[in-house]
Image (cartoon, rainbow, N blue to C red):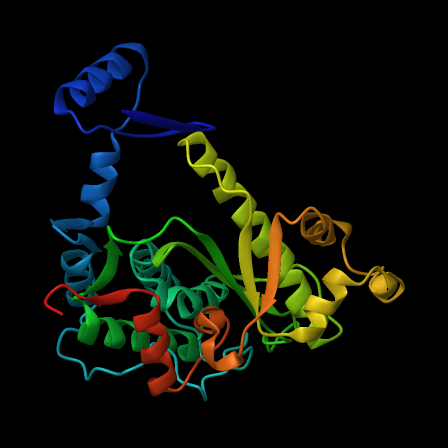
Length: 320
């Protein structure tokens, strides 16, 4: 049996049902707590096991959500966000029902627990909850149309995967139309299995593509360090990890101290990646843009590339 505690959250599991039941009974007797099984039920997470691995999805939750917002009979689309859709505050746009918009975004955020393919577009739409306009509601409904046609998709976890710790980092320079801040995207694997992903607007404005990529690499490196420590708690020691980046200038900045004078304006907390590389804990390596899996977390893509990256994330239908 393994139990992991993070601040006020506990995740536990056991190969013996008796041990699990005893642990649950003891914890309930000592603390007021809600069970993770209740959260799983609320999110509609379905876990299907087979000899080769585990398939996790939220098909029922997705279908109920699409029906709830009246999009069940809508025409489906291949991508959740069109390449031409550049969302901004749209101050001149027509106001829409704020309660409805927030309800849609809240429901979509829960779905990202098993749907990394909508993480970027939901994050973009979530920026406008304080004053949603018609353009924002249209984008949110497009996501629902996409889900309507892909509700069967979920994540596949293979039992035959290795335990290598790997990350992909990418950035969309000045992608936000309002403040020109860049977006950091990252996805993290143990072997072939996707275990974590993120899409987040950077806190400061990057002056170049290289700087945006460097800041993104630093953020993703911190996430990999946390995963490395978590694996150690489970008895899985990993001496190092690989972080793939498609920007050679960002890699040069992380390796060459001579560049420091040109990067003093970057927050110090992102420079720790150099120390990790010197200690050979992090191996920042170059990967071609066409093979950059984190691209799906930073920008809207055409349908062919989007579907290709979606497959590479390990997303599929259980029937496939």
